[in-house]
Image 1 (cartoon, rainbow, N blue to C red):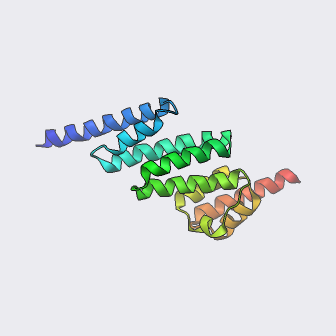
Image 2 (cartoon, helix red, strand yellow):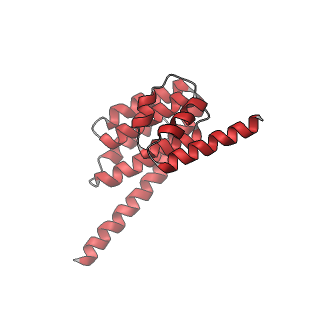
Image 3 (cartoon, rainbow, N blue to C red):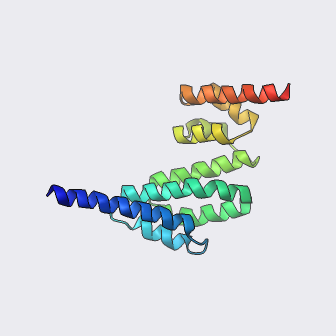
Length: 160
């Protein structure tokens, strides 16, 4: 019986890595079908992990291309993941990051209520002084507050 369990874990890992490879090379037009197929995997947690990783790789690239590309992608992905709470939240948080990064409208309460993942990612990516100051004062963890303060000091030193 132990061999069967080990084989199942190995098969799961193989599928996960195959999904990662497929997602990394998928054409834009085929991406929705691939995401939908992965979400039909019997191991829901593994499927969501694969899609989450894809979002984390794809979103920054699309943000660099501008709001139109990113917003279209979010709309398409939102329809596919509507029943997946974790993925829907991750996509909303990428949209919030996009708003901050591209100088759009964002709400302080959303930044403060966001996940630890979001706050750490925001400190790493954003240059908006107001967002960094907010995270330095009200970030969820000491790590986030410290990193935001450090980034603010670094920015201030560059201006001197």
